[in-house]
Image (cartoon, rainbow, N blue to C red; front, side, top):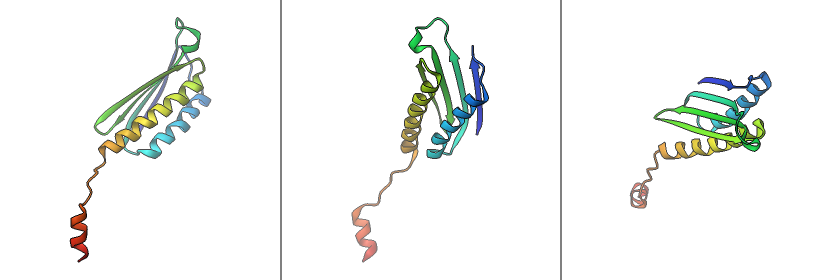
Amino acid sequence: MNLTISGHHLEVTPALREYVLTKLERVTRHFDQVVDVNVLLTVEKQKEKERRQRCEVTLHVKGRDIFVEQAHEDLYAAIDQLMDKLDRQVVRHKDRTQEHHHTSPKRLDVGAA
């Protein structure tokens, strides 16, 4: 998995990088076929105060790109909310890609006899 964490109008500190990594572990625990992850942390200068800190993630999995963004007044809260959204989308993508073939009850009875 290739991981890129970058900041815009913000220096990505080791503590911030470690926080993002620990949150991404939850996503990769559900779905391990992640190819590439791009994280962009931004501080908006012109926006209103409660939406100033922004976090974006582009997750490239086999067959699809998943993009999620979240804004909050606290960057750590924005990362938390973003990872919740990303986790839901990854689980939904995994559920869609899995095969849901079930054998019919008739075939189960014939095999037992």
